[in-house]
Image 1 (cartoon, rainbow, N blue to C red):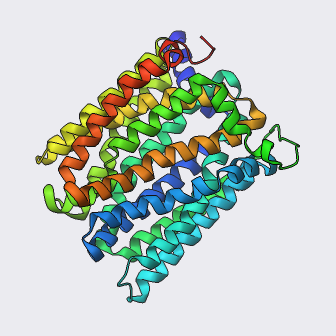
Image 2: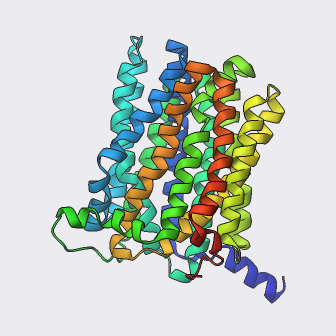
Length: 414
């Protein structure tokens, strides 16, 4: 191996040279993996109970509402009490939710989705606190020069879990719902132990009393930083219009006729495309035209959503989903790097809490929109209309946010 090759390899894995980041990365992977198992199991179980796509949309909105209602609290708690502590407690609460789901299905008396909805509401509260804490913590675990590399690998943990998690969820649910929920609980326990194994990192805690002005600091910063506002809102409206994840059980059961294992495959396909891009970005970070690449990626996401929506061929649907994940990874990489590197550490938790609301709105509310629209006009038209809307949003944002379009490098304000 030549010195240049060794240098390139070291740069590719720079974030992993820091022990706290290794534990954080593993914990992030395990929690996401477990959440995907729960998501696949819950989606299939609810659709089995009701056969109503509207109920699949309810799953998303229930998990999003806590992030919205607690947005002024979650980020402030993360900034004040320590991100590692908040992340660990939230992970433990998620484990508790998985255990309650296990108890519900073990009772043999589950005939209504209402008890599942109640558990998902608590799960949403845990995620509301987990998100800002985990997103903000990574910046305290690596030096600034390794942060972009950490973002790429952090995204790879999330995306890799999104590949294997849904497949595992489908296979485990095929064995039994109890095996699926029990496995998720064990994984979340392991993640919780890893989080608390991380040495308490340095963090610039804010010391102001929790007055309204302090709580609104995240909103105030994002509104004043138009590049960050443009990046976050682009994701919000594009995915809000084009999200089709909630309808995958319908495609797996009724359109593509694949069964539970096929649902897991469909759920994992976007992650498969995304993880390849994430690994590439870890060694080949975006050094120019970052804003333009983000806008193009969102346009591709929308166009590929249309392809998936009209496809009735399993392999074509899977390829479309994989390419959607690849495009989405570029957008996520640019957005997350901008948010973390351009935000002062003392308000990073509150900014990430707002970002989580935007991301949650795009994902969970997007799923509610998809489920509602599918119930009204049909599944395929609902997905196609959403994809067209995402393309339109990307074009509109290129005009409304010229500063975002002009962003070239991610490691500096230019």
